[in-house]
Image (cartoon, rainbow, N blue to C red):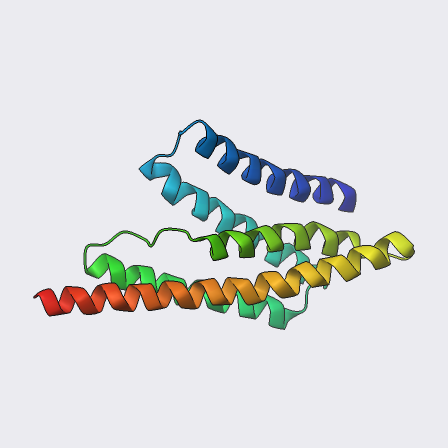
Length: 158
């Protein structure tokens, strides 16, 4: 079952990346897609965090750090909504963070075992997880700064 889960994780990450590239290439970007794509990414990350933490592959502190960032953004988006703004545009840093995490999770799942392949997967999985978590927080902080500026400008206009 671990290998089926690994296949699902890998295919989910590849399909998300391919979907974005094709949408941009064929100019098939929509307002709904701008909301659903980040929502799908968050659902992927949340469900994977739960599974990897449950199997004790991912330590609770990593899961808590990533979930705390999501909570911070949830508060920021709620603040934007009170000022009649939609969610902030996804930036390159946020995409890079998600990309790193989508590589980290299947590798960390594969690292659960013995042998050189599992060891190699652990090395690369933790490298991607470390960069992904750091970039995820950096992107989140930039979103909060953007939200604060919008709300501050909105308050000045009133």
